[in-house]
Length: 508
Ligand SMILES: [Zn+2]
Image 1: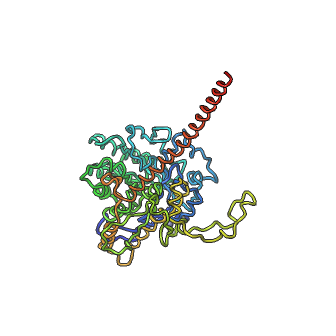
Image 2 (image 1 turned 120 degrees about the horizontal axis):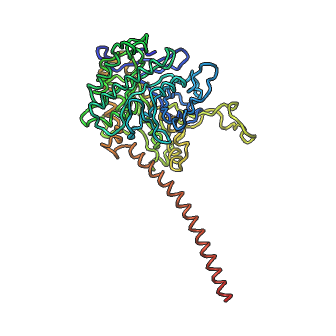
Image 3 (image 1 turned 90 degrees about the vertical axis):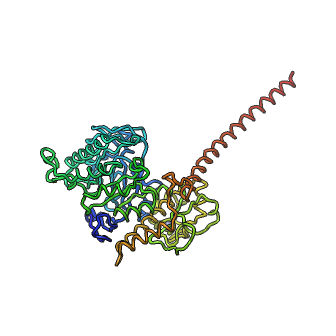
């Protein structure tokens, strides 16, 4: 259950607040504002399950189900239920149901690629083999058989080029509400908690209309279908806002905060508000300050690890003010200036990269006597250094990204711990929180490179560029080595033929 523990300004429904989400005893308790981790085909990118377990910041794992749609029926649904009614998605992913919270949506919320239009009977989804049609009934079956802890309802959010006509927006609202009703009717009370993806696009009246339709008392045959609930909202446990389609539909003078507020204004304030694909801590802080958002996915921080950035920031800001230059949100470890930098990624960081330790000797799987435990390796180790990570990145070692993901997730979790401390701390006032947010914004350079207003302007943009260059060089390196070999072989052949020819000449 979601229980609010503190609200800075109880007169406002958009006040920053802290809360705890506990589905049932034995499940991990999620403190909010907090994070959930994104996956690719159910796997946290770059991390094996033992590294997921070592990263304490990972407690809530989100699965985008469309990546399993290349087989019909999708492979996770084929797993036979073990021990009665155990959740299948947990078993399939090898994540203990008592250690992790699992949520599942159909679409990958960070994927804004253009898609064929949805219709009254299906939604289009993207998998490795191309576009798949998923009917509301299919989605009910997937949710029912996989039993994630939290399922996102199917909403009709268009991924066709904007702008959208009034008729299209009305259709989107109607379909989303109808499909939610179908899902509520198909699931029993013990089934997953349902989060609804808020429809209405960039239109304020449409967003309000969708929220109103959730609160309306359902009559007639529809009422029987969702009995004993009286309105759709009674069956909804939380509200989801996907920022990628919103950014696509947004006019330059509109603000995302206003749209989110339009959706939330009529709704009860006691349910969690989840935002996907926020672009870094600046945007997250603004959404907490102005809308009272509770949960964020960490797509941004995970993507930073992909491109070789070790994050380094905190909340409230510990750096003394009055400096002219803005600080970077992290280190672009591709940069040559880290070649001989033997410091760790973050002082006092508790992640497995900054505070590494060995696995106890009796837990190591040994394949032969060569793998006998080394006495020198037991216990805690020195932290990995920036210079080492720089080397790993330039030699394209996969472990670079593993170490970075574990570090970045830990930085995000600590950042949110700081946010919770300021909001929930003794005497925490709205002014206090607003002041700390302003100080953060004044201290750190925002990553606005994704919005194209500043494509080269910060450490993440530089890292993305360096990452592409190494990718390119690697390709060039392999190809040039192959080309060299081919050239050498050709030269040998020509030489041999020349020699033969010369010999022939002698014979003549
Ligand atoms: Zn670290």
